[in-house]
Length: 183
Picture 1 (cartoon, one colour):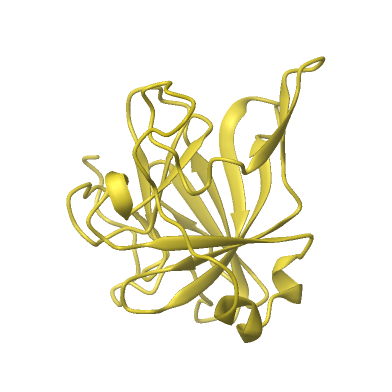
Picture 2: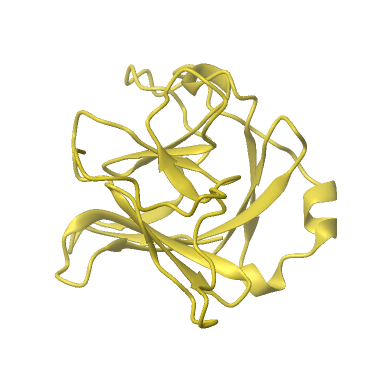
């Protein structure tokens, strides 16, 4: 928190350095690594009390919770969008099952139903119904969360659409709360 900002001056996020080699961007709770035309982000969501916000436009973590500066937010196994009950950003999501990031086309964004975070529904658990609420399958024998196969399309109020694939929820040591996303 006291160190100088290591972000590129243009705020473009991860990219190629002067030598043409891809650079990894490191934020306080996230790392962003270029992978071809995509970015792989690992978000540390292990804090049970604090949301970690990702700005997809800039490809970086942001602190703001009351603005349009972020699209996705992570806390433990939850993913919120900046829309509906979770924020003012009008972000909407659509899940396209059984696709990888490479399989997504512009046509996938044109059909189907978009959703956003909503107030608590039928389960009456007191928690909002998050648009990413079904991102995982839970194995009661191992207590492991496994991402559902597919891609989430994330649409912001500017009608920009990102394809986001959840690759993992555990770090190399097997600790939960470490989302790995390819987008």
